[in-house]
Length: 244
Ligand SMILES: NC(=O)c1ccc[n+]([C@@H]2O[C@H](COP(=O)([O-])OP(=O)(O)OC[C@H]3O[C@@H](n4cnc5c(N)ncnc54)[C@H](O)[C@@H]3O)[C@@H](O)[C@H]2O)c1
Image (cartoon, rainbow, N blue to C red):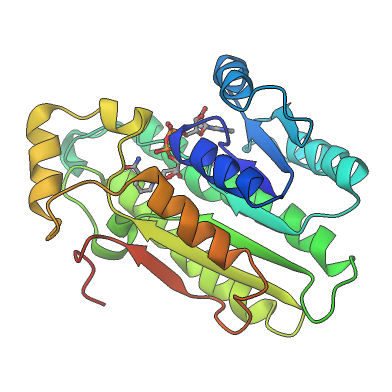
């Protein structure tokens, strides 16, 4: 399993679950420091590869994918998880450069990875399935979120990209889905003020953040051959927040 943003909170939890399930994992991340910490957490497992990759760099993405195919022979599952929050500000006070950067990482980066992963999966054997892709969107991409315009828009676009890829790959033996989690307790959440935290929890009927292990469990199912007829779909982890 290949996981972008793999050194972050959700990425590491997915990696842990995949390893516990017998898979090997390749963690891609822009941050060498975070990768070193992930290496410690997943200590000494020779089923783990760590690659310093910026997902917005198309050449770096191609190089890393090639390295992973050389390492394990194929890519069974690709989790498009790298992402950034950007600023918490209303549109009228937001910075256009920050807006562009969020779209660049969360959408263009995910697109570059998806493009490379699908090209690889289309060329590999598999009966009936050649591979699974999970794009990590957000509940904010379905609903919009005040003071998170760039983030919400990037995740809404990722949902549309997932639906498109699901349709394009429907007869290619490749399953493409996305997940839409509510807030999780990761580094991303440490960027929130107490007021913003309270605002977010207030929107979740279960009244708590999603655990990263809950996200990992759903991702593993979506990457398994048991997920064979659901594609181009959005799987919520919203504690009851999502209503469609
Ligand atoms: N934490 C939440 O509340 C939450 C909720 C819903 C969805 N998500 C999504 O889950 C995904 C993972 O987030 P997280 O909560 O684990 O955050 P995190 O900050 O812990 O991890 C994100 C990782 O992505 C990496 N990254 C950022 N830009 C990159 C780039 N250009 N190239 C490669 N790696 C890059 C970071 O270095 C980091 O390790 C993101 O897409 C995020 O939008 C998070």
